[in-house]
Amino acid sequence: MDGEGVYTDSDQVRWPGIYVKGTFESKVQKKLQADRIIKEKRRLYEEKAREFFTNFQEAFTKSDKKTFKDNLGPYFATGESCGEFIAEPYPKFEEKLPDKWNEWFKLQFGDGKTIKFRALGSKEEAKLIAPA
Image (cartoon, rainbow, N blue to C red; front, side):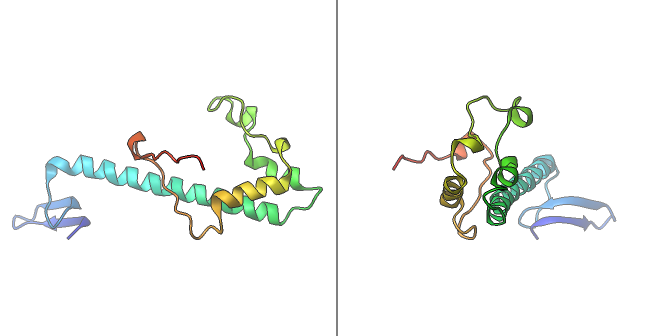
């Protein structure tokens, strides 16, 4: 048995926790619980990243020349929304035409089915991409 479960021993003592290869070790339960929480958080971040790109594509598709700025503006950082997290310079919608932004997003995201999002758990998991 792997994963979460409850084992009841011969003295009717219940042992809830995470089992690995059918064994329960009370010494590592806190670490296993923390690892499970981190894994779930990473999955949620990956989901949010995919959702961001999907929503951008939908907003671009339903926009016309007059509504590009209003519809795509929320996908770009502003001083009010991100000022305490990132410093300027950061990309602004006005720097490129909407079609160029869409090309860039498609280059990064593609059709959305082939790309695999991966939230990093540590800096050691990062890979340096060589410039083309």
